[in-house]
Structure formats: structure tokens, C-alpha cells
Length: 291
Image 1 (tube, one colour):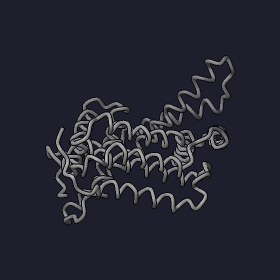
Image 2 (spheres, rainbow, N blue to C red; image 1 turned 90 degrees about the vertical axis):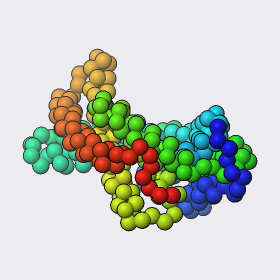
Image 3 (cartoon, one colour; image 1 turned 60 degrees about the vertical axis):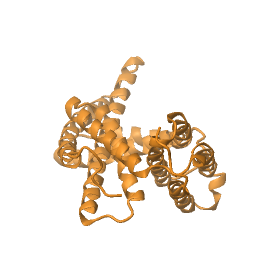
Image 4 (cartoon, rainbow, N blue to C red; image 1 turned 180 degrees about the vertical axis):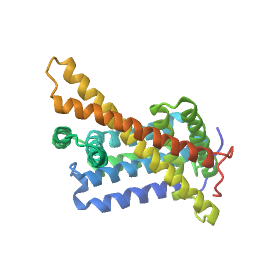
């Protein structure tokens, strides 16, 4: 384990700022309110991803156990809102897909839209997510207790770790061509991008262009993931109806099958775009952006 310099922890301060910006955006009742809008849930999960990205720079000079302990608190907060977020993303992805698909087809997709709209509404009325203020307070307190006493994290080594991990997973995604491989790569591409946005103070024009392309890759991976999630959900829906011994609504079944086919074609296109950017962005053995 590499020894950290005993200087003020600037990375923790950035983490605090990320949390403060989010909490200010949802108002004064964040300490007790666990009912967030879909946009607020999205922003909360973005904030947790930024914290997890920052956490990676502690890896070179802190024990894996301590880093994982802090990360577990972050994951718990995000997971408590996962069902609401997933239901919203599936419905929005379906709406976009139906709009695009319907331009060249006469098929009625309304029964499918109605089902996912009901699922979205039902999900919001269920469960008890962690209140945002309490969740983030716990995360920051644990962060300080477990990591701050050791000193300043090694930013350069931490960012290079994230880049190397993303690069390795990109290569695996290209060779395996499996949905899960692209999903794993997406997570580390996101960490790496957030690190560059939050930690790289003064970027050259070349570095700015690189981050822009990295952002585009993240968007492609995100759209690909949304389609993968909806495709799996449709499969589970149709399988569960049949397994339950209930007659499957013919309109719902036909719509689901057709939508699965369209999503499979969309996935191929986005995978091809991601593969091109993998080759462009991960040509170097180490992080190419100056910190």
C-alpha cells in the first residue's frame, strides 16, 4: 500500500460540495422527506456515482476494506431509490422506443405503455427509501472516520486506476460482446469521467476534446444500458405471465415481442458506436489527461 501525503484532504471537500449542491436542489425538507421526484432521484443517483468516483482515488493508499466500507454506505442510499429509478427509466425508454418504432409500423403499443405506466405509479407508492439528508450525512461521517485520518489521497494514481479499469473492461466488452460486459464498462467509464471533471483543474484544448468524447461514450453506454434493461424486463414480463398459468393478453404479447426485436437492433447499433470510441479513447496504456 502506498503511503499518502499528510495534507488536507481536498477530495473529501469536493465530495462535500457535491452533496451540498444536491441537497440544496431539493429544498429544506431533505432531512425528513424520502419522497423525491423522478428528476430528483436521478440527481441523487448521479451524486452517489460522483462520490464513488472520488472514492476510487483512495485505493492506492488505503486498505480495500476501508474503501469498500465507505462505498457500501453510498451503494445503500442509491439502491433504496433503485426501483423508482428503474421503473421511470423503463417507461421513458419505452415511450421513446414506441414513438420511433411506430413511425414505420401500424401496430398498437398502447397496452404495453399502459402496463409500464402502471408499474411506474405502483413503484412510487411502495417501499421506504433512505431520506437523502440522513443518507448523505452517514456517508460523509463514515468517509471521514475511515479515510481522512490517513491523509491526502493520491489523485494521479487513483485516476489512472479508474482509466486502466475502464480500458480493461472496454477490451472485454469488445471481445465478449455481452450486455453485462458493456454495463460493467459503463460504470468505470462514468467513474473516470467524473474524476476528470471534478479533479482535473486546468485542461488543455486537447484534454477538453478528450473529455467531450468520453462524455459521448458515456451517453452511448447509458442508452445501450437502458435498452438492455427494458429488453430484459419485457422478457420477464412475458415469461411470468406464461409461468403463472394466466392467458397472456394477445396485444400485450405481440407488442412485447415486436419491441424486443426492435430493441435488439438498437443495441447492435449502439454497441458498434461504443466499440469505435473504445478504440479511440483507450489507445494509451495510462490516463492521457494531465491532472
